[in-house]
Image 1 (tube, helix red, strand yellow):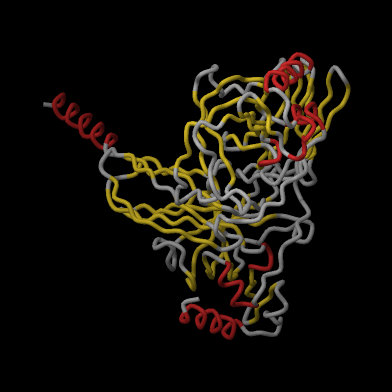
Image 2 (image 1 turned 90 degrees about the vertical axis):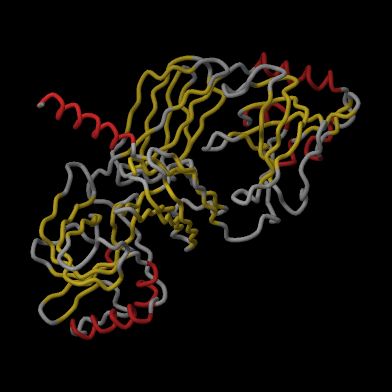
Length: 473
């Protein structure tokens, strides 16, 4: 009998495990700002979660019970939102993508000036190929600023590891802008200098300014490279093959994020190797690349104010290969932060926050080597509710960044009103110290002096919050 019961329990447990499903997807946006954060929240079937998209703009909620779910994708700066409802079957997998766009795709693009000469262009490109266009996919609703071009590879002059052999197919993105409203026609022959973005997609390096069309064996060159206009394609290809022999070098590239997964622009990357020192700085996406490196072994450092320096030694670089070194930097302690002052007074701060709560600090723990304190607090009043399970007398956790203007954490027993953001499922103070109002006796104390005079009584401040809640702002 006992054996039968154990077997039944095992079967039920296996059945329950199989019933778990996944909802995943990506969020497309035309906002390219390092300060922007995309959060995806999910509510339904007893589940309330929020996570931040990864570096590729994608998310995944796993181990979900079957049921109906409402998902919301939110971009914080500027404030954009997209919402949808899906049904998840037992053990199912649902793909749900979102689009957050500030304007239409027929935009002006101020293309950067390409390098002078083929050698400079060669060094900049991730791949150089001769292709014949097969066709263009219709512009997807979530990606209106691009045409996705399918093409057959005729020859590869500079190879990326993701490219197949000659005769195989590849895709690249053609930006849709006011001078190029239409996609390339099928059977068009092109020699392309391609760059690769953080999502692994190929784009035309410098847009249309480095695309060489081939018609009846003759090169039609862009204006930036008019010296090659009318050249026989065989002669032009010979020049590319010569560059391939002369510049058989490698590169080191990667992306840098902090200990909570936020990208880090402005990190100074240093590299020392056989030919001396090289340097780069991470871009708005937290990524860097150092090209044209002779094969050999290199030492890499990453430095940024407020973070511990990272060193990676004995990195191997090979000819015609990219070496990827992704890094995660940890805060070094008390840091400098230039907090943005909330616009629009108390109403603006309210609008920017995902939650507004009155809490009582129960504990605060600062992880070793980190520049924040993780507070646990009891909720005593809810003014703006982000999710249904936050209610009076419930417990909430939020982070207080420790910086030069605020080096001491809130003490246990402190009462305060806190305006909170959600990033990667973690609560942070909206606009740092500007989003906190301390309650001391019957008076309030806060850094946002424009709307929080120190003489204001607690009951008057609470009345303002309740008025905002009633207005549904």
